[in-house]
Length: 238
Image (cartoon, rainbow, N blue to C red):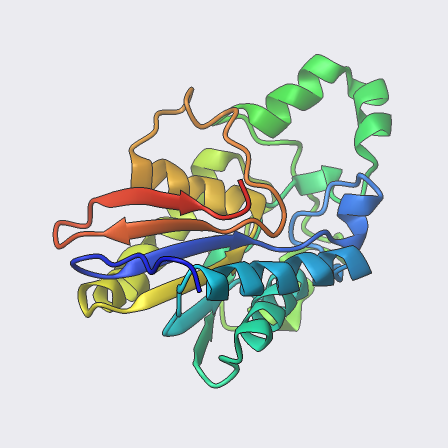
């Protein structure tokens, strides 16, 4: 068993979902509910084993409402034999909504719009892709999992700034009280929702976050003190 990381208050572990079918196909995914590949399931299982080896035992699992994050969290917990812990899911932890780019191949999109334009949409802090039409069948307003969400809160497209603004209320209202109670939280979510959380936790500015990458299935561990200052203590697998 590896070293156990302790902190004055709670502990926060961020876990990006394992490889999805559209990661494999190099397509913009966003809020489209695609599944994990076999490799993605293995990445999730290995993440759970790495957390167990490091002595990190979560009390609560948080995840988005998208199956690639849900299954990643479940598989990781199964590897740790912690299937019984509390699980909380929320749409505010969903991946960034990629607007009308969702489902499109990234290389083909670069050929159509230019590499510079696609990079701006993907990596700028406050420039969203083109909006998804409200009548598009893939718009979240037509998905029953969001039936209790106010329509004006459901995005047509998002930049990272938008993701930060819709994710933080969940962090402060739900996670912070748990951290203050000394709970260890595992967050199974997505590249951009987790990047937004890292931006807040580490106090990164809009330039510093641009090149911050979170690989699939590689946990990041933070200790959080009584003033909610977060210190990245470990990046498992690096």
